[in-house]
Length: 568
Ligand SMILES: [Zn+2]
Image 1 (tube, rainbow, N blue to C red):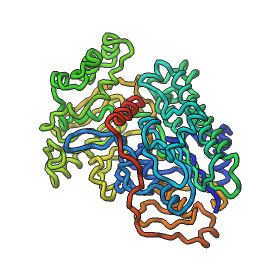
Image 2 (cartoon, rainbow, N blue to C red):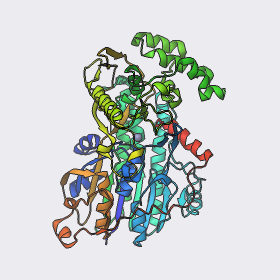
Image 3 (cartoon, protein in one colour):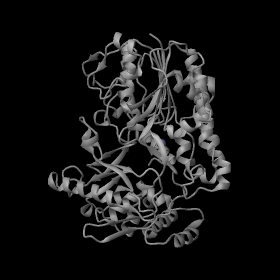
Image 4 (cartoon, rainbow, N blue to C red):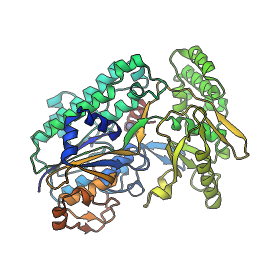
C-alpha cells in the first residue's frame, strides 16, 4: 500500500485558487487538480478551525466530537474557557492508523494539543500554550532535536491588533517567516523519518486573508488604490509560496503515493455581522446591556487598574457610536485619540455586561444563545414553547433585517442547532447558528421590532483594525494518487468525508459511528470493485492523550494569543 501525504492550507478557497490556476500562477496545485480529483469541501456549520479540523480528523460532526469554537461556554457560571484537544470526544485518524501499525508523522494540525501518543511522531497545533508545555511534541524529546537543528520554534505569528494597519510590512514578514519555517520543519521530518501517513498544516493562508483582504477587494471601505499597489498581492504571495511548499513537500513522492490538499473552510470579505450582533440583540429588546456606570465599575481592567483611560474611551465610543453619523464618528475618533477605532470596546463586549434578568438571547461569537431557565445560571426563558417561539422569532427577524445602504439581507441562513448537529454534545452548541452575508460589509441595519416599530442601527464604521477577511462555508479538496480519478470535479465533498476516505484507501475499516462517507467516486472504478468499503464497530473510546488540559497559566497564554489574532 502506498503512502499518503496530506497538506492543509487553513482557510484556502477555490474562489482565489481557480483564477490563479487559470493564469498559470500556481503550477503545483494546477498539476494536482489536472491529474486528480478536486472540489469544494463543505466545512462544519461553525466554519471555524477548532470545529472544522476536529471534524476532519475524527470524521464526526461537532455534535459528536464536542468542539465548536476556540472557547466552550460554562452556562452555569456564564464563563468562557479556552479549549484544546482534551475536549475532543473521538479518535483522530492518526490514532486509528497507529493502532493498525501504520506509522504517522503529524505536524501542526490546529487543535491537537496535547499531542497524542502515536506510532511515529506528532507536533501539536497552535493551541499549544508554548513549546515548553508538556505535550507539545510526541515523543517529548523530539523538541530538543528540533531546537538544536532550527534554534527557534515559532508557533503562531506575533501579529498584534492593528499590526497590519500600522506595520503591514512587519506582519507580512512575520507570516512569511512562519510559513518558511513550517516548510523547513516539515521537509526535515519528512526526510528523516519513516511514515505511511504524513500531514502538515499551513496557517499563513488564513492569517493573511484575515488581515489583508481589503487591499485586494474593491468592495471594502478601506480599499485604497495606493495601498493596493503595495499590499494588494499580499494574499497571492502567500498562496504562491504555499504552492511552492507543496512542490517541495512532494519532491520524493513516488507514483504510489496519494496526495491530498485541503482546507478547513474558505474565505471571503468580512461582513462584520459578528460586530453588529450584540447591538442588534440590544436594539430589538432581546438583550439588555447593563448601564455604563455598572459596566465601568465591574470591568476587570478597572479592578486591575489597567488601561483605565483606554477603556473609558472605548466604552464611551461603543455606547454612543450607534447614535452618531459617520462624520461625527470621525470627529470623535480624532478627539479620543488618533487611530483608535473602538475595536477594543466591541471586542470586550463581555458576557458580564448583560442584565441577565432582562436578557432572553445573547451572542456567542457570530451565533446566538438563549438565556434558558435551568441551563444558564440566570436563565429567564422557559424550555419548550417559549424557547421555540423565541428561536423562531429571532430567525424571522434576522431574515427580515436589511443593510441600511444597499437593502441587502444581512444573513443568508440561520439554523437551529438540532438541524445541523447530532450526537451527545449537541447540548453544548449555540442555540442558533448564523450564516452572515458573505459578499459585502454591513453598513448599518434596519428592521422592525416586535411592536412593529422601525429599529435602525447606524453604521458602526469600525472598519480599521478589524479583520477584513472572514471564513466562508466551503474550503478546498484536491486528491491525486494511483487509485484516484483524473480531472474529476466533485460536488458533494464534506470535511467529515476525508478521514473515512483515507482509512478506506489505506485498507482500514470505517468505524460505524463516523458521520463522514467514503468518497468512492474519487477512486478508479476497478479499485472500488476490488475493495468494498468495510465497517467496524463504533470506536468512541477517546484518544489516548498524555498529560492534563491547560494549567491556569497556559490558559491565560492561549487566551492572549487568541485575542491578539482577533479570534476572541
Ligand atoms: Zn481564521
